[in-house]
Image (tube, rainbow, N blue to C red; front, side, top):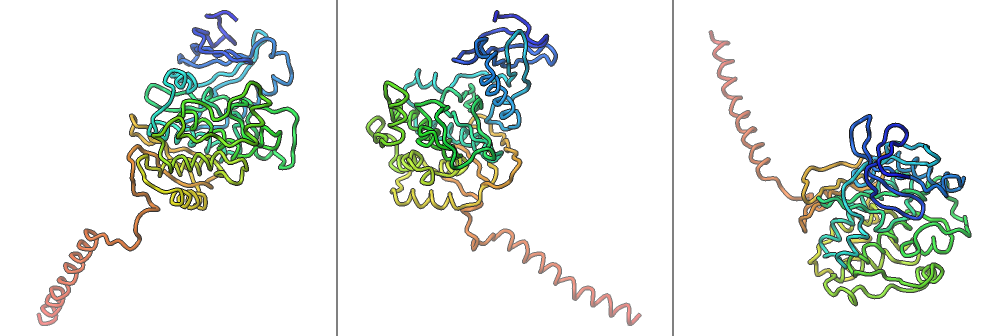
Length: 371
């Protein structure tokens, strides 16, 4: 497909942004609304394949129902010149995988900040009843102001459609990042996305993946059976308490991880990079967070102090507000026995004033009676 062509009589292609095995992504001009959009066009060899057409349509429908500041917005879906396409929000930035290749590894503070945003977006999808199933740094766009956007819901699964006992011979996802249960062909769950987030976090801190192999089959075996190398082998600056969180996230059994991305996000929000917490203290924090009722949470960018609340259809998960200050006092941290002395003093003054008016009104009353 040539550049500068007009797709569906509306979207003028201007620049190729990237390509994959299934599709090519362009920046385009929406001639009707006069704005930039991203256009994902399925390759011609797949556009005629009913299975891939269904998968492509699934991505459009799944992501179109999600509205969150950390998820790429879907605007339109269609078919033209023999190709299927998706019209998406255009976000200037670079995918996380490219940044990892450029930088090698990320500092702890920056890793925590970006992973909190990833958990916010994926956690919202979990609350909406969707599992992403293909979380990897290639599907995370980082904007110049450090905003993270999750994209590519091409193999997302609706929770309502998943049977716990289901088994498949076809494994969808990326072998470097999928969970042990996905590698085994078992049913995914929100904890599967949590595992993939853990692999991404490990790679950001260590500068390399925990598991490497020459084939997808061998990689799947490592995810199912092997323990990840200690992250301190590659980055001694990672606090031991953070390593304990990563070990929990990369547990082979889904029940041993956090149940949703929201729970992982909450733990990371309350994590202090320079904390001297022991492993026991970290596990206590993890347990406390996992038992807490969860609600929506707000993403706050370091360079944009405007809070952006994450709306959701099912208010069932914890409210937390990620910001970049290390220790913070939240609603849960306040001492219920503490006294607000200013309010108490104002109350006493008001009481004294009202009490002083009583003799005055009595004096007026007696004057009227004697007159």
